[in-house]
Length: 586
Ligand code: UDP
Ligand code: MN
Image (cartoon, rainbow, N blue to C red; front, side, top):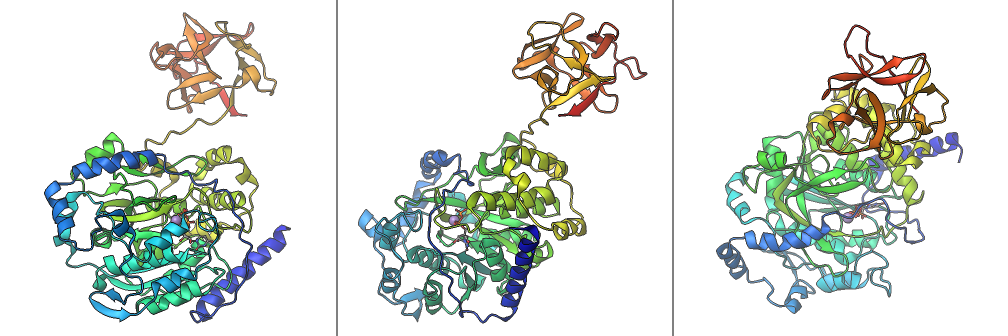
């Protein structure tokens, strides 16, 4: 499609959205049918430590104090003892209770029965829907917190109240219902202002609409056109009554006292984002597992989200298991934020479509613009992690992810956006439209730059070196002549790369071609296999003096005899004796 036409369409949809937000009475709807096809979910790295989850499962149970744990089980009459009981739903077909008061006669069984189904239970949701239906609207789950968390209840006397915002698109009814019921049952009523469900134009409008009958705190909004999760969450946020906004996915189960630690942290430090530890619920059998609380969110340069281990420095800063985990990135689906700060800091980038990228934007923005991101170990919420998206992307999955992440790179990553493009080449050609208003937001909030973020928030992130360079002097280029253990020299620059193209790895100060490194041998320079820690292979490029300096021998790479093109090592000083090299990216 032509750019102009596309811009026009984007404009029109934005207007429609705004008009819709202002005028749409909740519940009314226009149905647009979408062909359900399944796209591979290529843009989400399944938690690297997913196996750790299993390992840690045992560790966490071991860490629990046994008396405490037994007491918990004994004191909880609902606690299932057998597998059958675990999946028996005491709330099916009975009056549904909230806070000991009967408020509804919602028929969960009937509601779930009328969900869309397929003979393949994995087909519509990428998790086992029949298993989900069997579990029904509620189940007991293991209290997965570290046992020391229970002692923190005294912190919780003066907390703000929160709205829950849950957007969904063609969600399995049993999973959506269980998500909502777990909020109702495991959140103290006085901390819960409302639950805002945003139906992102699902095929069946009743899935959301019927839930209104479950509890007076539930509001149901519906998009007249599919918007994706970013614009849907904004729509929800605009209609939320709470002082705090808590965003949740539509296939989660809140654990015991999950909200209080999040709210408590926001009372200590209002401008920031707090996330629970996300316990994985297995897509294949809906088993609730206990996640490690020793991981934080990170990313690759292609802007893939990953889970990473805490560093030694991270651990040193924490004294108790209940201390917040400082994280460079949030997974994105589950978090709390003060409503005031959410909107002051620009909400989300409304240009992002369907799914993906928004967690980078909100994470970079919070760190760079005076906020923070913490994971609160004493807050636990289960989430069904799935291996592929069950829904369509109107523009295609890859293209949408490229566009969304390009918006992040262009607005927040300064020169580091080059690394993003090197790792996600398709994004160079994505059309992202006008980014000026988001850049203005960054100006207005007087944000730090991306280098600050890397230095202060994610110092352990490996920064791959800028690709290839030529190293030249008077248009004569440093050349390896393609040989090992052979004297390097000068050759007329030919712009063809090859033996004249070099990599300078800044962190390790190595000048290399493939696995061979520039190496000092007596007074000359030769190419030798790179060895970590070989001090004769370490050169620092001084950008001001334009020198290549080896501190171990205290020498510089110099042109020893220009006429005969001889290069070697020699004196290094600031008065122009050492060679000034021109380093040019190729
Ligand atoms: N979602 C939505 N509209 C969309 C895509 C997703 O409302 O076009 C919702 C989805 O139902 C879910 C949330 O956004 O509640 C996050 O999506 P998903 O769970 O697929 O992402 P994941 O957890 O796999 O990253
Ligand atoms: Mn999800």
